[in-house]
Structure formats: structure tokens, C-alpha cells
Length: 395
Image 1 (tube, rainbow, N blue to C red):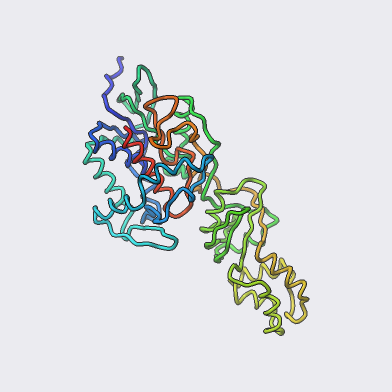
Image 2: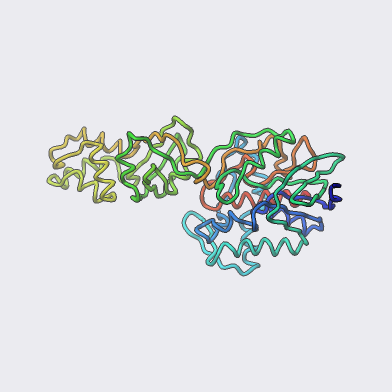
């Protein structure tokens, strides 16, 4: 049985997520004939679940400092040329109502489906062909063209864009396919690991795992990196925005420091002894922390009885520990619960201006497939839009 004659395109984009759709729309509206292929049954699946279904589509303050990469300078070009204001202009042009939450995070007033619909409309304006529910069976390169066998069809083009993301959230169909293609074409990888992911605690921290459901505003830190947001205790360990943020920087064997009372001045515990000598240490902590958390911390600190009976030295030591409580996670909840992936296709392999592979002209990699990972709060979508736009302008 003979293979079907390849359909000819100017560019084939693997992945119909945020980065892939952005690249497709940008290239299509420049007159390029573009094909997008995805194995999922509909485009933009990760967009649809983001932000609790309202899509945290960018962050007004997004800049290179908000991204992790083996090369922290790599993201500067794309982020500098396609800014949050550029994406906001598109959102406004489509009359999608949005609002700003804390720390510059922008969300749709309505549904994340509006963002997907907007990107699909922009693709239609460029006559982009999108094929979902098509598994890619083979990708080859010869005579300056890439040939992609997908389902029962074959397509070829002088340009191929890897936009299939990383392995985070496999229930949405996420795989390591982008890494397989990269390796196939000789591109190096930075070892991928889960990011923006809950941390797990061992049996020695069972006291804190028993606080499941308790949340409190803290500062979470590793080295000089610190985030102030809510931390949430879970039956497996630690979660919440502060923990998700710091998890991207955490490595096995490292401690995570937590400041449980970041607003309290030096000496506050000793001052409390003088102002409330008959109060119990547990009740003093309870005025500043959720009850169950105050009780657990008081137990660990061995703070029993009235404040008047506790020495200043003991209170000073407790104060120091509460400002830098050390947890040593025994792991994370893995790619299944990770919002994104740290690592991926090495930036040393790519042009920061076009996202094109240096050693194989016509091959591009964008979005989460690349070793550029944003903080929690709309930063990863901004990288998807910026890297997709940069590749789309180069196709």
C-alpha cells in the first residue's frame, strides 16, 4: 500500500496549546500556509483549566527576572518584543472582559474558553489548518523539508515548530514528546523536573500533615529567593501559592525556610510577655496564627504555661525559629500535580530572537518545551505568547 502524497505547507506546528496557536496565528496572518497538529481532542486544553477556568492569561509586570532558565538572559529578546500590553490589546480587541488580581495577575471575567476562542479566531484570520485527535506517528527531515505522518495523513514543510509543552499535568495529555523530537534532531536537553508543585513531608513531620486544610500568609524561602503568599498544609505536605513558587527552586535534600509571622518586629514575643504576662504562649500565638497551626507550633517549640514563666532567652529562640522554620521536604507531588516543568530543550540550542535551532535551520521550539519557566501568576502564558510570536514572525 503506497503512502499518501504529502500535503505541502510553509510550516507545521506540533501542539495546539497557547504557544502553538500564537505562532500559527502570527505566521498565518503573514501569509504563511500553516498546519497545526495535536493529539488532544480540542485545542488549548491547558488554557481551559488555568486560573480556575478563568485563565490567568498574563501578568502586567512580566519580565526576564520572573523566569528560571540555565541561561537567564535567553528570554529577554522575546519578552521584550512581545509584552503583556500587546496581548492585552488583543484581548481588548476581542471585547473580552478581564480584571487584575493580586500581584499583577490578569484573569478573564468570564471563561478561559474566551481566550481559546480568540486564538482560534486569529488562526482563522490567517487560514491556519488545525487538526486535533491526530497522533504524530513519524517525523523526518530530508532535502530541507520536514515530513510529519499524523493519523492517516502526511504533511511536509520547510519549517517545523515544537510546541507540545512538557510532561506536567499528564491527565490533559501532556507527554515528553517534545523532548523525543528534540533528541531525534540532536538538540540537548536540560533535565526536566516538576515546577509550581506541592511539596511532600515525611513521617517526622506528621504533626504538620495533620493540619490539612490550614492556610496562612507566610514568606517561603530558599537561599536568597523568597516569596510572600499563602501556604497551605495538606495531608501530604505543603502547598499554596508561596510553596508552589518556591518549589521551582527546590532541589532534593534542601531545606525550605518559612517565616510564619513576617509582619512581626524583632522582640515581639518578649514584648508580649511584658504586656500579657498571664496569657499562655499558645493563646499569644493563636492571636496571630490559625488556631490549629498555633497549637502545633507551640507544641513543637515546647511553649507551655504562662508567658511570665518563660525566659526571655526561650522566647527569643522561639521567635527566631518562627521567622525561619525549617522544613526538609522528601519530594514533590510530581508531574501529575505540577503546573509547569523546569528544564526542557536547552536554550543554547536556539536563537533567542527567532526560537530557531542553531544546528538545524527550519526547526523551532517554543513555550514550555523550552528551558524557560515562569513564576506562578500568568508568567508562563506570557512566555507562551512571546515565544510563539517570535517564532511566528520568523517563519
